[in-house]
Image (cartoon, rainbow, N blue to C red; front, side, top):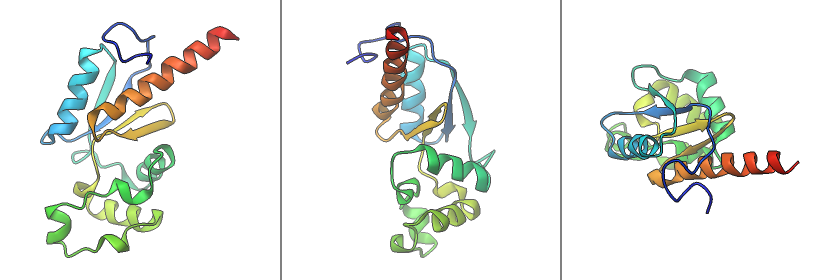
Length: 141
């Protein structure tokens, strides 16, 4: 598959944007994977710089997953006494994550207007593969 065979096999990409939590092993692993492949990226520590309502709308527009997947149903979710059934639609997810950004699933990685929740970290390769396929298609025309 294009882009998965190692560093240096991908055409240049614009810097990716990584919504990152340094305490998260998957987020750290995703950034390490990008570094191993020499993929330029910018890190946004979303707990320091929360995306806000418009940023969350942009994330939900860009990911292929249902809105509920952007919410971590972890210990903090349980501590708040929340019910996952209440956070399946877009507006409920946005409202929750504006109030509790720590519940945002991470890492979220953007390339242009496309994004993935990189869980597992290898999902970031989907963005890189899509970029390689787009570049190949442009060259063919």
